[in-house]
Image 1: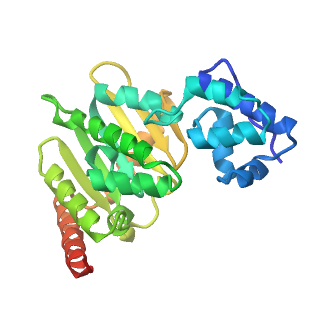
Image 2 (image 1 turned 90 degrees about the vertical axis):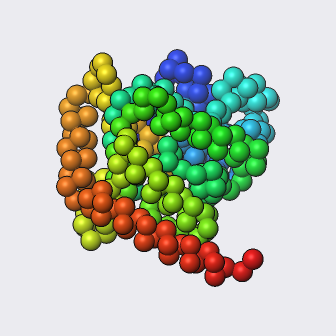
Length: 282
């Protein structure tokens, strides 16, 4: 079994919380899996809490405090690190996004947040957080829609998106929600500053099979890359690492359908979802 990752409590308040949580868990003689089962949540979430990559929701934190006999320490500490609309690991990327003049994005599973409808965003967040309170879900949805002001500014960045075919085929929220979402995607793809390509299943394997990718370019300063999974993300600034992912993006572009072909494919899926929605019982 690999040694646990070293924690640096001085890195951030979230890291301090994570170090405290790990100390209490070990004192209680519990593994991450055992603690997760008692709440219950996935043990991978416990790992993210301890690493300071994610802050638990208030109800989960309360259970952790009781289960680990923290005597209110976790409750007190949580009040200083309580969750914002964005997870800890994504905040530096979110701070940089409005400053970009060009964004290259590859999405393997969902429509990019900058192009999501309210209903699609709500459905995606509910799927990922089935035990969360509605008020918190709505807070996250509002935050996501506010991010879209980037594309509605007087000088919006160029947004070039490559979407895996899975994004179009997976009916998040149901046919009606998908029909609306794809209609918005078609509309955005016909604006001067948004380009959309579809990477078809027929293209086979590609360099980003295991996650999603964003590359941001700025008026001044070097490019950065951001790779993300379901509950983790990493901002990369090293020139070598960014170049590696820039090459991966070039390969994705070469394998994807042209923008015009992609628009036709998206439109076709949109019409299919509309037809399915009409057949659904009221």
